[in-house]
Length: 131
Image (cartoon, rainbow, N blue to C red; front, side, top):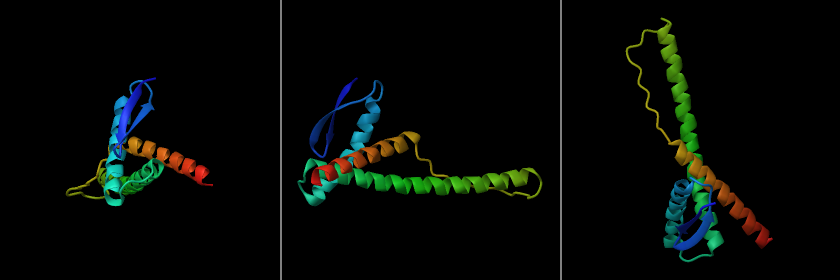
């Protein structure tokens, strides 16, 4: 199992991953690092677990917003498809149908979901140690 060294919030971590997933891990770590670095700039030095938890929660929040946008786009797409089907059956005479659908790459969604899962695991660990 490959070991990958990642940096998050100026701290180094050695993380194991499945063969071939190294780039996925590096991408996810880079996203988490952006959030952690931003937090460190705003708040200052904080315990590692708190930094990772807060950065993960920020990414989870962003993921939830993106998922909402994807659902909204899917709804608009379904409406447009219905219009096209109706137009194809002769019920409606279309002049032109335009649909703008934002696309979120599947890899990005998977990375954010993985980060959200890690944040939840970290939160449970922090709660267990605090309680």
